[in-house]
Image (cartoon, one colour):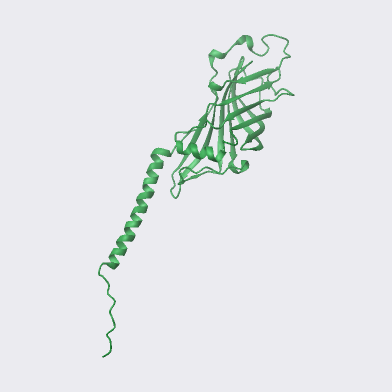
Amino acid sequence: MPKRARRRRYTKSTGPTASRLLISIAGIAVVAILVLAAGWWFFVRSDAKLATGPPAIPEDLIDASDAPGADGDGTDLLTFRIIADRSEAAYFVGEQLASLSIPSTASGTTGDVGGEFHLTPDGTALAADTTSQFTIGLTSLRSDESIRDNRVQGALETGLFPTATFTFTSFTGYDPLIPEGEQQDIRLTGTLDLHGVQREVTWKVELLRQANVITALATVTIAFADYGITPPSVGGFTLVGNDATLQVQLVAETI
């Protein structure tokens, strides 16, 4: 007798089970994304704001007897030393959670700022045959999130390049007719040495000067690629912009 062909058996639940499995997987994926988004929003996300003006001149530093022209014949150079514990450097970068349009601005700061700059006796230009510069310690940069800090340290390779240095070459826009204590807006050009790369940049500087004290806010935007820096990724699930805005708030006095 001819053999009967075997019927392939299907369980009634095969189709629905597969569908339920796919739905479950999709649901888990959505939940995971939401958890990451919530975690980033509440624990990593920042919305930092840039400073908008120079620091106020500390009254305890003002010494009218040490002001330019207060004594002497007006031929001595003016040397200003940055006061580290009153100064600060910061970076600002755009962050966005991957696949979601939730942009924010993250920042990190350090108080490790030092240096000197030398001016002509009238204080209107850089003194010739001198080196004016400031240096920022990058290993002490801190934000509000340690995960971000670790990524930034790695991107900057601070083990190899622990500092960034800016050396002045010229400035323009200083108006000697503006009274002391009123804001001056100038452009400061020089060489920024960062991540082992030296490039010319121009900072927008807002400054105040009174007697022997200068305070300033310097701002510049740089492209990571110009300095061979790979934009840091925070936790592996954020997108970081291709550039960073740097700000340095300085308080300096004559020495």
